[in-house]
Image 1 (spheres, rainbow over the protein chains, first blue to last red):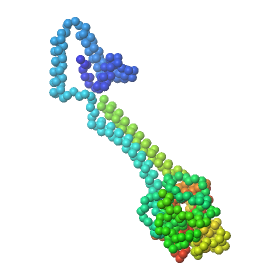
Image 2: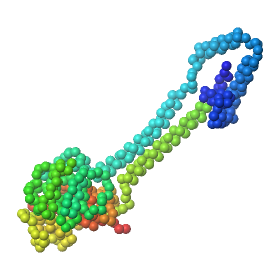
Image 3: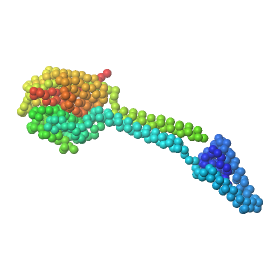
Image 4: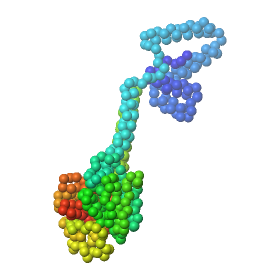
Amino acid sequence: MSPKQVKGLTEKQELLLSRYFDGECSYIGRYAAQSLLRRREDAREFLSQLSAISCECHNTLSHDGEKTGKELWAQIAARIESEERAAFYLGERREGPQRSPVGFIRSFYNRQAVIGGLSGAALAALVLTFVTRSANTPETLTIARNGSSSASAPSEVTQISLGQGSSRLSASNPGMRRRSNTSTMEVDWMRANGPLALIQNPHGKSAIIWVRRKPGAVMRNARQPVPASPTMHMVFGEGLDETTLDRSK
Amino acid sequence: MVTSLESLSRRRCFKTTCLSIVISFLGTALAYADQHPDDGSNVTIFVRTIEATDPISGEPPPEDGSASLHVDPALKDLQSKLAQLPFSSFKLISSKEEHLSLRKKDVVSLPNGQSLALRPMYIDQKRVGVWLNWKDRGGADILNTRIHFDADDFVLTGTDCEHDAGLILAIKAVPTTH
């Protein structure tokens, strides 16, 4: 025995009102039910139906022998028959309110908007990073072989720092950070159209970068010809010190 | 009922669109800020082009052998550095002064048809980071590098030229005072 389906109330609302009528609601549920009852006429109608059914049940149970099992069965049979008729003409009763395709599409687009926004932001950040970096950084870092420029070696970033009287050659992060306050010249990466020589004044702080484009050119302080390999030569005022890039990896 | 649901959905759609725009804007702004930390500063870059002639071969001269050097009077401040090079004569060909903004690229034309592209990355009172790309007359790279050096110091770079000569660039960057 249930109240008539009140048009406009969802199953959830009906359930809420049923729980409210039975006194099974929590504080929030009670508040929601009361506000629903205040706002909606059909909710009040549903609640009155519920109370009417309750009274009817109460009377039925308390009435001795007036309604026999036969009468009750007749009512049940009539109800079943009406349900079958309704199912035949109107289709099977649905379990719950089905979402319309438009609502589904809209929620899909809502989700897409959020995901699209996030991915757009990430993409914009990535593109900016690459655009600004690629403007400063060549695609490849190559140390020329045999005095001619080589084209497409894999990109390589090298930091070279020339200290006072000592040298170190190490790979470092290419990120554009401010360098330390050491009084040296530091090189993030270098590409030249010929073998390179870094000539350091023993009393000075910085070095001279010399690009040898003529194979026969002789450098001061250099004691041997430049080998035809990717080599970074560091020629110091006192003696020759050379470090190959291969060794530094 | 349907109308209120539709309006609710429309409101939600509007909110999510606004949110996505704000997120995009913030992400872009953060990335841009990260890449452009000091865009307000300016840099003055001095580029001196020096021709080196009379190559020296064999053993290097003694430390105090500056008497054998013929250095242009305008290059006296670079004499100790030029003495490290295997040439005995140095002549100033041109001297240029360029005012650049940080992170902005500028191309300096050199007298012999070569060019020097410069992009100062950062500068403070002591250190400067510069990307430089020195190209020959045909547009081929002579040197392409990113270096960090002291702001009060000249960095020298050079290359061999025809007739056993050398071409040297002396580059210095200082913060522009407003």
